Length: 416
Image (cartoon, rainbow, N blue to C red; front, side, top):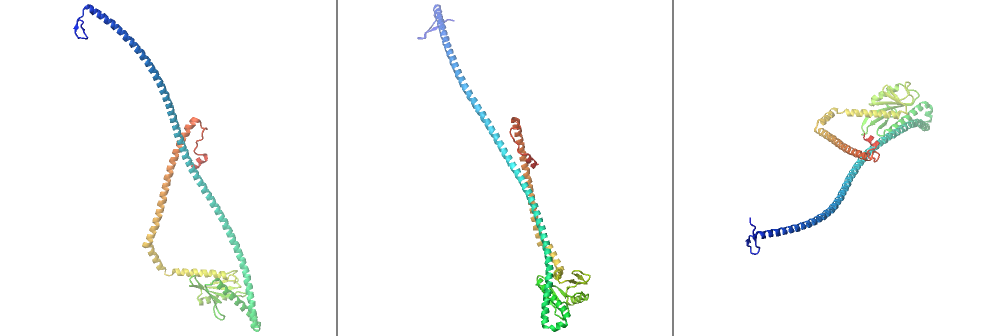
């Protein structure tokens, strides 16, 4: 293939000769060699500069990387420190919350113990009050016994005073009668004395009955009139006559048996309920007041008590008789009321109120038991978590480092 040279000015191509071709090729080779050397030198310079720049960049990169590495290490350390602090704060808060909850539970348990102690103290106080009441009752009974003894002594003294008053009135009556009928009393001294004693006792008996029973009517039977010495018409709280008691007053040294039959005849004729003989001398077979052949016999000192007992018995008998009146009608009315709508509705209202109270109590009991069960579960959860924390801390710091017991031995015994 021929080597063709093209003119850069005119653009004509021509074939140089071999000599020119050789010279040109040589020149071109030299130029190529020089250009190659020049390019190699430039390449070496650029490569050295690039190596220097790369080395410098590598150094700068190493510095930046070292700086970034230190910054990252600081940030990582700070992040770790913050994370550890946050974890520590969270654990501390959880522990504080757990301790607070445990303190509340402990406070509640101590409050329960306090309530138990208060109830026990209340029971002791009640026992003390019962003991005091028993002592008071013993003192009252002792005072009542003392009062009864004093009353008996007063009755004895009253009996003596009564005897004294009777004797004084006898003397006064005797003096008055002796002034008016001096000669007649001389002839009938013994007979007059017995009549006077009887009249004085009758007057005293009537006065005692009137003062003791102001609502009753006490009638005096005049001398020469057949019958008892006085009649007591017993009246109830409404002023209705309930019965009749007749009294025969005797003041002699000996008791006569015919007094009983005479008084029984007077009781039948007057329509009385009870007959009483007030006498100074009792029958031989009696040493105190009592009943003999349907007639009550007592001394003058016992007349007031006897009248009170007999009067109460007559009032009770009268009330019993009155309650028997129209008994059939009352039973019919009672049956109608019990089977009527009014009683049925009232009983239904009572039953509904009872059932409502019973259901309310049952609901309250169920709610409290449910609440107690929930609190027991919460307490078990707290104690389980506390045991886990306690085991972890004891594993790290030892069992004697920190006391994390939620309950003391006394509290554990109380919960059991």
